[in-house]
Amino acid sequence: TGSSSARECLTALGADELARRLPTGTGREELLSAARHEADLLYHPYVDRNHLLLAAARLTGDPIQWRDIRAGISEGLPLHGKWRPRGDAQQSWPRNRTSGSSKGG
Image 1 (cartoon, rainbow, N blue to C red):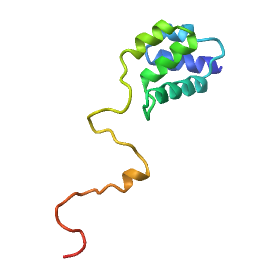
Image 2 (cartoon, rainbow, N blue to C red; image 1 turned 90 degrees about the vertical axis):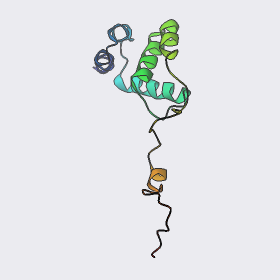
Image 3 (spheres, rainbow, N blue to C red; image 1 turned 60 degrees about the horizontal axis):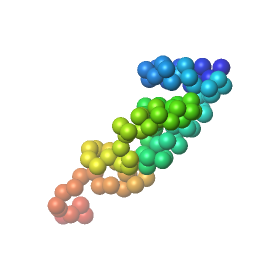
């Protein structure tokens, strides 16, 4: 059933307690949609384990667990590292930045 898929997802993440407390009938798509919403609230352009855990805590109606999970997550984009957005903008970035001109010569 759909609820077993959501529960299996949480179990695979090591969140057995959240998986057991997930409301009956909660499907995997509902969990993923809720995780996308949690990521959006944090201005994250991705969904990861923490967003799934936040979503599950919200779906179980446990504000204390949600707050505890949320406390360890930064809002916004990483301030350092190699992350950058993907898509059309990435393709327009120069691959080789040299001081010389690339127009013949």
